Image (tube, rainbow, N blue to C red; front, top):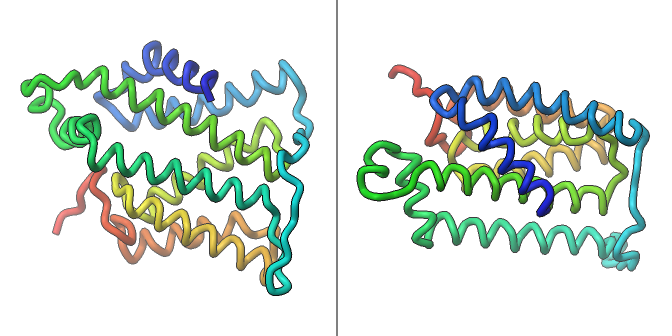
Length: 223
């Protein structure tokens, strides 16, 4: 978590700060960085799947359903992180200043909010949370250097389904996408699980271009 957070700080200060005025450029740079980082990992190690011994091996059986304790651990950690993030964004002084910076960067700066410092802080925090996500993922599944790219695209799908900038929508969309993937793997064709996710994203964008719960960021369509 600390290593990925530090990497996020270096990338933000050395690269992404120059794309701040053009978010589309930042997105394109992100896609390029995914490819670069993947191949750096391949060169340093290898492209083979890797896994770690599960930290918890207990399995409970409840009503004929087998529940692995390691999955319960991941769920509880996720709930705690989401709850703390919600609390920070909606109720703390830092969160209020951050939301003001998102709404109107210039006015926030005139009111004494160090906008650039807040942007860097969010980037570092997001990177650290990505590191935590990777740690939780490898506790459940084997991973390769290319696993992260798939997760990024799913995260993008979640953001679009819920609505760009809507944190409530992101959480709800993540749950919806998880349920769709779970049912498709259990009762459909498991090899098409990723395709179901993007079909859902396309359908939502056709019916509700701003997402199921309404986006607060991104371009607005003319009425």
